[in-house]
Image (cartoon, rainbow, N blue to C red):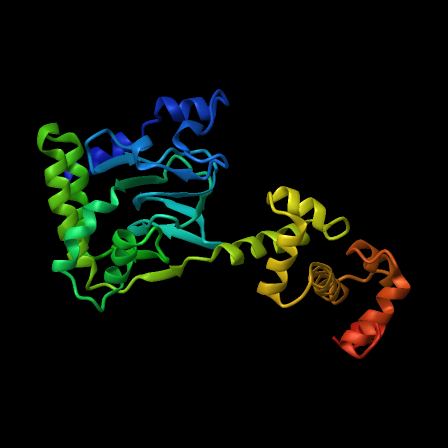
Length: 319
């Protein structure tokens, strides 16, 4: 590691005023950066200085960022440490040297990071990438990514590249970061130039791809998570209110995405939980049935036998 990058990393390790407030529980996430009523979309104009196309900033540590998306491209670079995120309902651990490309509309959730986790965020206006097509092959992953970014309202995927051990990629990133302490007048044009080179080099790499979950799929995931957490008390009214959807519309969505009704889906999840526990826990079948949400145990026995072809006791003895 060269001296300039070492000094930059040491500078990044220092605690910011915002982070001090989080540690002392005097402050939290700045809600002014969100633009819609549900506060889950961050606008480029809220986080980048007027007239600029690129902003580079250190990720704020020690705090949980709930699921959100952006109307711009964000590149997260793990300079040191790691970052655990949920991207389109997929849990991902990013390690030192990883580059995460997030297009507009892709949802991610970020878990709190520690002192040693240094993440640098590149916030980039989607217009910046319009010139890229002249230089990259139409068959590479980045071509499809930038097509979505420039010509569509949202991206269909997120991409994760590993730069660790790739001297060329690491050099491009380190040069960009070193510009933050350079001549402010020339910082943005230099970063634009270096970012273009980085993108060209990345076209030769094969990233991990995380496809964007459709709105309906995302809602179904939330419904299933709700059911898993509320096996005994789950009901359509409660989750409809939580998701700000009418019962009828949510029922239709669940049937379309899962092929079964709300009640049948809930019963399947209860059966699955019962079958998981009965194999490892020596408890009364009646008590376990009630524990996972079957209040009417006689009905439970009938439906279990109809589904599995054996009684709950026989199931336990043979699995």
